[in-house]
Length: 247
Ligand code: SF4
Ligand code: SF4
Ligand code: FES
Image: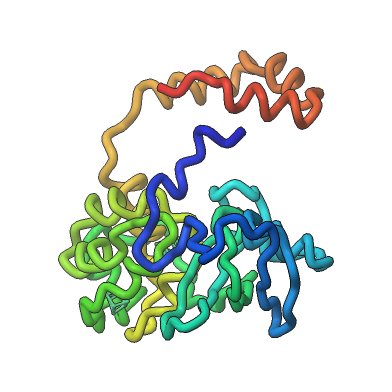
């Protein structure tokens, strides 16, 4: 399962995606959840370890496959001063890991009407002036579990290059881990979202294919297929999803 998962294609710089336990034969490992030690299977993901320890995750879990960004987690490792960031559903535990989940991250998010905005740098200046305080420290890039070049898209926003921001930030999950590490207190993922909206509204070429598909939907061409999907069992639906043709 999950062979088509886009996240975690490769290990990222500040996120441990592979176990580096000193004893690979050890079947159990100790992790600290909210400061309390728990013995958990050594090959568990962070999310698996939390649930194995008896906690029910009510907030901080969604897709469980690296897509939704709901499971932001910070952790430290023994004898290592660094704070690491990762998605709980795709990051493997390590012996001695201290972890905390961040199910919701407070973020600056101005309200705007996209129809009243212009696709230029002045819009970023007005809505997210803190972007121009970016120190180019690259901490956000190191924190990103999607391995996105976060600093590069913030720099593109400063230049007013909306297409570049859209392009680089396209796979952002809005997990928030870049924002919690940013010394300039920028909320990078909302800046990326604004750029993608501006691009879609003002800069993207009109898609004839999309227009055609919307027309077909309005004419109820796919109603029968929708009903079939809605009546399927979850497992069958998952199978169908993973077996779909990707263009
Ligand atoms: S850019 Fe920020 S919010 Fe988006 S996936 Fe990367 S760390 Fe998460
Ligand atoms: S962490 Fe903040 S200040 Fe540093 S490069 Fe990223 S956006 Fe700029
Ligand atoms: S639960 Fe969706 S990314 Fe982890």
